[in-house]
Image 1 (cartoon, protein in one colour):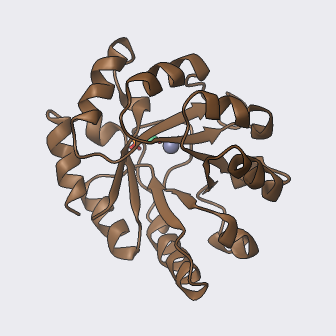
Image 2 (cartoon, protein in one colour):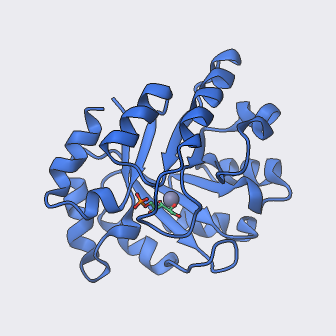
Length: 215
Ligand code: DX5
Ligand code: ZN
């Protein structure tokens, strides 16, 4: 059974508490929180006050996906705002090993996200230090984009690397996830699925989460 992490980017920002409570009452496992700075990605989402407000009501772990440059300077602040998993982009970190150690020293689980063009092989020696790898199956910045098929192959390759090293690093996939793409990803070895527009755009999000959960 996959871990389901609904992306709050697609929630109704005028009714955040209502949507957080809807996720609390569903079979979802985590809250996926997308932080965008308008520099690393061509969009701006929301920052600490909104994350802290969500954390106040959330009864499940906050899975925070940073699409920002220079994440190191904000790591402690994300811990304070309620992050449990903190995932940074490979492409945004010059000293990735240092960033990962910093996240762990703050008592959070550490993740690395890979853009569609970045091969899983770049993680090689760093893999044992990671709690999670986030494979992007769209170019980060927006919800509601089309799934990039090559992500499935990347999941298979990464799963093989994790098994070969006898690790328990989680593989999460983000972008364009629905029942069809989700099934292919779980089949390839994905442990966690992020879904934004598919969940919040559906007539019955609780039921949609339940269907994803069964994949
Ligand atoms: C995109 C974000 C995603 C986004 C996914 O940059 O990282 O988490 O919310 O949205 P969907 O599921 O609609 O593709
Ligand atoms: Zn995301």
